[in-house]
Image (cartoon, rainbow, N blue to C red; front, side, top):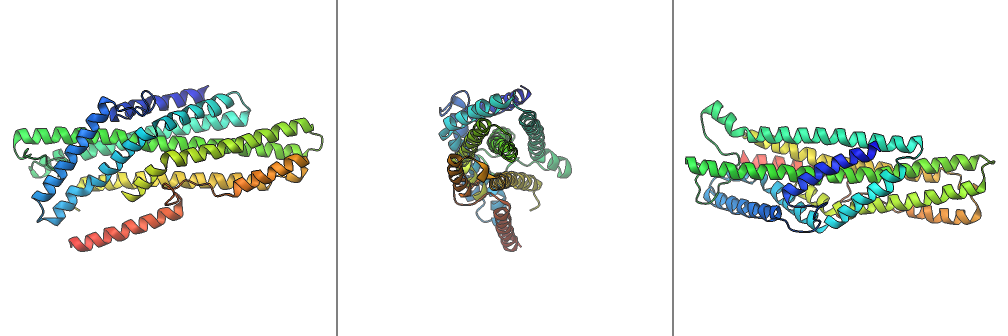
Length: 370
């Protein structure tokens, strides 16, 4: 029961963020809401303001790069917005399936099964709170930049360096309008980041939980097979349960890949003296790391499932189930892993190659600036 309560707490927080960004997955899946149109208008104004500012400062390449520092994040989050609308029904169905087939099914299970659920729920709640605090603190630090500059240099600067057309931030009225627009966009962006990243984390973790149950039941079956006195009917029931667990875990991993594959691709692809740049880079590095770390854990869990399967004394199964075990093993030998929409695996090896590419690009840009 505690696992279901913690899961509902997480869904309640995610439902709130989904309403703010206009992607109401659990209340109006796939439908455009007033907040959806509001966000789209904000993004269009941001794009127009960015183009206007780039044209205005076309002779200053360093300043232009500072203007573009948030472009990748804006494009990334807006693509995730459309993916959220497109996949909303699948996400809702998957979340319902997690509650029905994992939480409700095993809430009164064995001590080992309930321990897995309680541990997972507790860890997810702790991580969500830490993630929420870190993103909020970073956003506030980002937002306090104009105040910091004013007290340090007695100079008035905007939060972001793009300007709204025909609304000069150097005037009092223009500064207020620009700041209100930029702060509003910052808050919506933070909400969208929390929704997309933690939803991916939560669904991937529960897919790994389904793999944990398969491992637990395979080990129980191994003990039964090694015990020659175990009733054959009980062995058959346990084997059927293992077959069902394997089918379910495979389905869960495939659902995560199907729903979040495009988001992972966007995250990987889009991934000076202005201190918000460092806050931005820190957030982007952390966000990119989360996707690859989860992909690595999924890969490790699948390897653990495979090791458990091949170590089982399958030859002690009845002949009919030995044939089923061959199909069982063949399916597990097909590589299952999270990818960036099929283009790039999400594991540590790919993570290091992405970091290497980003470092080379950064060095090239620094040489150009210098």
